[in-house]
Length: 325
Image (tube, rainbow, N blue to C red; front, side, top):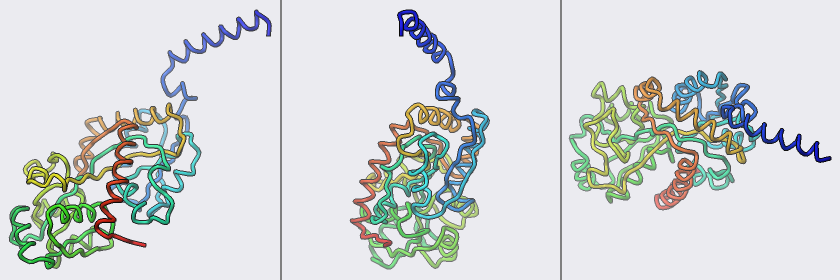
């Protein structure tokens, strides 16, 4: 190319750079997003993750002008495998929960773990609460511990299934407080709660959202939350940390992940839109009403959480001897 052609090329590059800087982020990445976004959910419709997905994506759709097509793929790894194998163009995402850092240790033969995806953003904390049947006769965690030690191995606790976050929370609580409870796993939250309220099971660890109506109707008694801090929905209920059991602190969450090698600029756009959505007062109100605590993060912060949890859950599952395969 001659000197004139080279000069034109340089001018085009400079002009292109100036124009690029003046464009919004979506235009800088080929107008991303410019078509519907596929959002994978690893559970059946109507569950906690689905609720968060619908609340948050409704807000993102308004800001981006692009709809989210929600697909349900129940199973430990079905959605994870789909997102891990999808094109890294930002048009296939997955809304996930704590289970993606738990399941690899429960299903070690799967070959799937959280390192196979790109973290985008944490959206909410999902508070886990410790509740008892109303007629158990305990009014605090301290009284529950005294009763459990006096009746070693006789008190029972319900969960929505082996290896679920509430189950792991209960196992951690037992380990930290040196008590022995009998685990009664159920296939879902609803039948477990029915048996707790009927007095057939003594204690339950479960998400706040799932037991909200039971709390309001005084059909269960809430003793503590496992989160780091008290939750706005239950301002008078202490955390296990406050009660002298900081090592029993247990968090559960929802967040969005993307296929491996998704370009950082696309991750940044999706993160920005998700964070804006979660910070919207109207969205926060809806999340609070459904039992969630808004808790946005950067992609890097979310990635650090995924790595740390994967290791800590691996140790907890091994220590508790939990196995599903």
